[in-house]
Length: 158
Length: 158
Length: 158
Length: 158
Image (cartoon, rainbow over all chains, first blue to last red; front, side):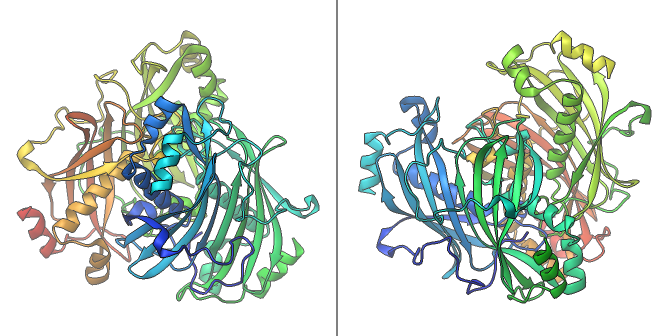
């Protein structure tokens, strides 16, 4: 099923908080994403599930820019970030060859999880936005654990 | 980033309504989904974005079972269903070779959109659940339009 | 880039042996695959890389039908099948809602690898065909190793 | 099924010509590809089908760098490039966070199709290589047609 829908959304939705748009001052990171054939579907536009991939690429690069490599996090700390919940709203479609900007803003940082607000934009047009909750788990047991102190500090400084 | 997290979720989330679990009497449809290599990630478990694919396969088969073929909907009515927003929560991981059951329940049916509650289960264990809002749009303009009457009737009877 | 091309292929290709079509007597297994939105691209047809997924689903079910579960193979024998090379030719496009049949035929069985010939068909029309070479490796080192005897016997009997 | 296998390949394969390695002088283009969670499978490494995506990203950027936008090709010339056949061999695995280089070399340019040799490398290590045959088709009928002259000239000059 193709992803997007024209603005405004057809009906108010209970699934997203009323005002997900982050304070621009809190936008920590921007990452470019090009749309290729692999990202599109037969509706001619980006398949909606693929925005989760775009958002994750931006989160990964945001962490990398802050010095956090997930492979090393696993090896050195035995910790792993996992996605606990996602809420996305689709506003307008992206098409083949579009160059998107994906943003990452840290909305909340808890001791064992964090909530990010992310957007995909084409120029000034917001195409999709979402809240992503990430939890920190033990790599072996997959049970929740504290985010390592060193990473908490990096997040708070970002 | 691997998908899931152990229960209960690390922190209460604002992104999902408090009680997404549908009245079992309203569960309309169940569809089996097998987990293949393509669905997994390096965390050893199903990649969280892929639950959106599993949910869509079940919705498509639910519509097909009700006599609605999306390709024909486009050709005969010029209408197309698109995903307007999604909210998913991940509870427990699925692994290679798992056989999942994906459910579809119609939570709300408006004139131009509908909201579905869906779950992915392995036996009695709920792995992921989500709210999916689907809008009906004109195939050419992608602008919202009424769900064709014939399909409204099918949905209400389901 | 969309997958397919009309028959006959534009030019003879050096990449596939001249006669990949298996002796029908050797077709061991058939598996149905439905085309969903996730499988298509903006060309309106199935994205060519996804035939590798369809082929793998059929191989996995072929092995499962013969009593070989890959998760168990890893845990009990420390062995894993990996793809060593693939050669696919695309003949005609598949579209949304198509119901395909994917075949598996064992063309060669060596001591540490095997070669399969697979096809994707819609009714009598062949859409794509391929040769897939699978190697058996040690799960830990990823180094080639013998296919376990019990599985060699299953393959030879199939 | 995870992608790769250690070198050398388990058995000689009939599916790939003996010497696919291009003359380095003919390597036209290099494109960086980062490995994200979405690219990996439960084997802990890049899922083999995803190299087709990596190769296509590089081809698309190679064409873009030469001034050919596929969306415009469709709109202005009614032409579309489609994949006619692929032959890939997997040598060594890529892992999460790896930064790969994907190369594009034009091996043959016919009037209606072309053959590319592509490789994925991590530093000096070749992970996967492939031959990809691309055909030019009419966007409406999907029937083979000549590559537009302007693009033939671009390809010959590249």
